[in-house]
Length: 452
Ligand code: FAD
Image 1 (spheres, protein in one colour):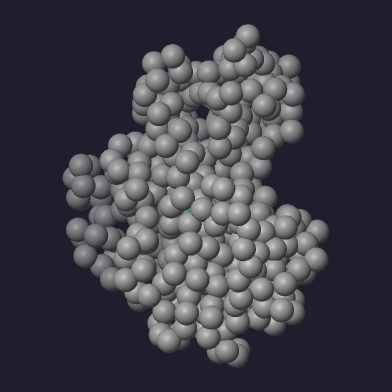
Image 2: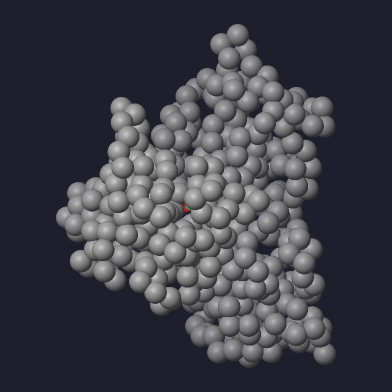
């Protein structure tokens, strides 16, 4: 069997691994239009903050390693067309423009997404950057150490924007975050958390300009951006702008080949099969079932792309493995605070069309007798359906790492557990690690009281 995989990021990498495991005799052709395979944007912040020194190490695979496993790796190779009936691909060498046609029996697309570029006057100015992929990582790292870049504007305060803001603030730049939402991290956290994080950012010399967007970028005679005009009419200096205002699927070329939805997302079934029987698709160019609602939506996470990649490989010769619904769990730090969240939040419930109630609790990570240098306050919010009592989501934050709790809640959501299941669930106790009642028990017991 000849399997072609397009795209070498999370989804593509996992699909290749899956095919190697499931079909050791298959011929695998792995196409990537860039000059590097398996760059992990998730590791970009560690590189920008100097924790990881070598940009090329932010990867799970090298070409020699994959070729040793028998994979035919084709870099600088953009797949530009597919003939699904003839099982043929058109591949263009991006360095010399030469085109060739090749065949496949099964095809897995993990073409991902590209950063959304704000369609505002001045968008073509220099020093307006994005934050995705290796090329931008290298440019951003270079900008961090340029002394003439003093003022940095980050557009968007999702997790990528926050990573950019923190990295440049730590590099000594004055950072301004602009976001149309009234709070930062608006799809990840409710205000009990974002109020604290907003103060944390301000204390670290990061200005927040919320409930507004960019109206225009202004440049100088050298076409370098110099300032930003916002939709509220305010203007501020900017030597560098980093746009992190969402993504768009890289699927224009697939129109008429596989079915796309109105947003250009590739339509797949739960086996990752597209409208073409021998073409599968995974990752940020597809939707995934969100466990709390049972509906499909875009949840652009590497963890999802990986799960889908494995499913696609398993299903090449028949319906063997469904992609399980996910809870949309993610974690991040904002300077000293570490947070994680999963499922539905108060702030996202309306948009998702669900009615939820929630309880918010604070506690210490370990018993209060443990000295402050080993202890910290923990903030936890549990969200549930007030009619069915089913757990719908949770958020946790502390200066110590308590994020693993969110994995337990993610499982509870996937298994449709109730607050009653969680209230007395067996979680370990050891004073060096936890309290006699884990904060998830405490919150679920509070929810029971509220509901009864
Ligand atoms: P992409 O990563 O978009 O990659 C697609 C690849 O396909 C690219 O290499 C592209 O060059 C190639 N390609 C596209 N079209 C073609 C074509 N026609 N021919 C050949 N090659 C093609 N997720 C997490 O779960 N945890 C995190 O901590 C996290 N941090 C992140 C931090 C940043 C800064 C960013 C930007 C994202 C982060 N994500 C994180 C999200 C995660 O990176 C994405 O969900 C994931 O990369 C999606 O993988 P993908 O395979 O769908 O596509």
